[in-house]
Length: 260
Length: 265
Image (cartoon, rainbow over all chains, first blue to last red; front, side, top):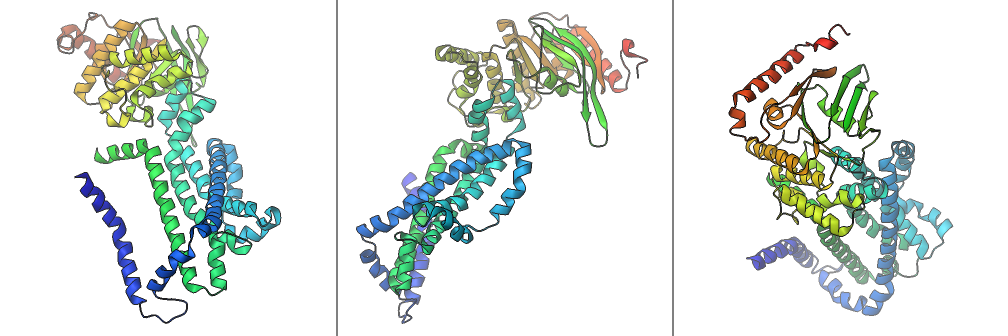
């Protein structure tokens, strides 16, 4: 029955985290360490630390900056990726330069970005975008290059050129690969969201956690870390949900190929 | 309708140049069903790609309705062997068949009509909303044929379209092609390595030599117009014709050229 199936799947998802939490609870129960308080104490302070006002004042701006940086990374990454993947000379020219810049971790670039973008929202969005763009760009290039030759010949023979070719052939064919890049970029984005707020910020989730750390509000700090993890999980689930719908054709195709 | 003059294609490899096609000259008239058959590796696919404007020839010319073919011309539709890779997997069957018509800027109502007719003509009237990967191989190739038919091309090029389907499906599809040809009067050039198929389907069979390729022979098939998998293939004339084609191909494989070419390097 479907209900049993859903319950079973939900059970599998929750099982290991539940076990880990229980282990954490009991192993930290009698803890007197200042930096590692008992889980019971951490959970106790959760509700009073993350009130609705704080969520609105700190978590929301962080998420909005993440969304903006991610969106910029997707637009730039896909546009540039299609260009680089389609034209051989562009790829040959740009590849060494891209490899060079890709190797530099964005956190290292933060002080430099601060010189150009200041210390307000723009800086944080640029940092997030600068880190997220790489997996998207490189995956787009690969996806575009791997367009099936027979499909490409078919499209050409039916007069599919220019923007129509992009819309009906290149982008859909590369979309599974692009989605994989976007998935990686999401993880990177969450990390950069926090890091960008550690250098110079006045609000944000990462800023708040670091503030707690600096003011020795350790249980509160831990609640912040837990919240960050939950947020990452929630975003990941949301991504999977959207991807399953948008790429339903691809999953169907893979399923059909596997069973044949 | 379709005129091939002195077509030559040389591939530039790293170490050597490979002359795949030396000199192909033939004409296909409006409404013909011509089969192209030859030994393996004789450049049938190269020829087809040059004719479709997908590959530029080294020299020689292809003309469609008198106009030279330099890129894929609007009056031509191609059906490839690999049906799984020629249909767009992110679109439904109907959208796949409709896409070339949208490119041609045909009005929506007319498009719908053409798509419905084409899918009905190939026997897939109730799979409009399915995705290609949900269908069997034979059905996928029917969708590719429907797409070509809906496009209303002047010439339909088919590159070994039934080589990758099972024998029974192949028999059905061969009959489908003849039906479509007789009903719609479309000009068809059918490339195959299957001698029986070439004789069964064609009005005329062009036998190609081995590489570097020339036209070995152009054979008129004088079997009756109504053909039947069971009876036509049992006729003595069929056996004679296919025997002749087979002999010619064997001669081609041994390097024997047609008399007019003998003595040329």
